[in-house]
Length: 138
Image (cartoon, rainbow, N blue to C red; front, side):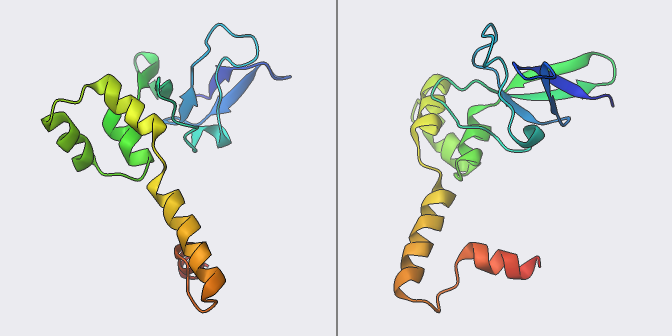
């Protein structure tokens, strides 16, 4: 597969992105904010209520394929489950409202991280999830 580049106001004129990576394409006609890419697309940018995060893939026959993330994928990026989206849909919540909920929500894993570190401030022997993971994968 060839290299995928997203136009951006950089010296090179574009930012490379890995196949399957994520880019924020909120401002396609802007001269400075056309496509925002973090860490070559391996990190999803901030979820906004308008959901302009897109996955970019290079396909064999069609070249680049760009698709908008689904509400389910946005919920998962926020640390929620696919079942949470199914429950919301069951009570009649529309996709546009699901995007807004995901964009306005706090990432559950970020809240967990903050709370664990607050607990560690009071109980120094407490092991946080990031400490446990760093020991596991060291």
